[in-house]
Image (tube, rainbow, N blue to C red; front, side, top):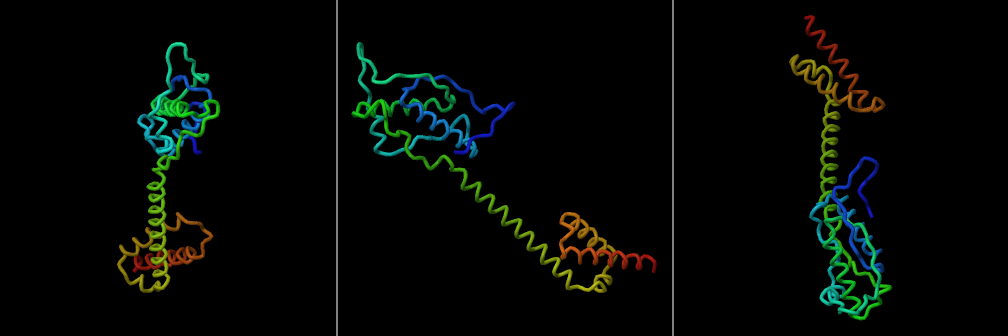
Length: 211
């Protein structure tokens, strides 16, 4: 799972608190916290996270059942303190309730089955992000194609035809293609022609000014 990048000087976008959880559920609570971190790395709201517990009938039945307690009755498990993100506290409580319901249904308290459930919404932001990236790439490709077509059109034009245009138009062509040439690698053979054309255009412009 993807986790938010941390390190010295970087602070998590949430506070934490100690919670008492059944020891056999320690690993599942850790996995729930990892889901939360993955959710954050996908651009999720740190303070109001989406439901990260899976919703399925086989697990939901446990949530409606409670383990009978009372004076003189001891829980069939030990508990430990774990530090969890505060925004995730309610979901940790829900997970513990599933565990208690699981025991009331006759489940093994020492080795509980996975009560997290499958969640497809953790990376719900990945689809629009991927679509945005595709749109950006498509835009860049379209721009490149347009530039290539412009270069091809310029290659098919003769320098003499360009020299017949007005001085302002020649200056616009020179300024435009000087900027383009500065943005690409000097090893490109296509741009080598453009440089030659620019040099000839400058020479033509110089002749017009001398006339």
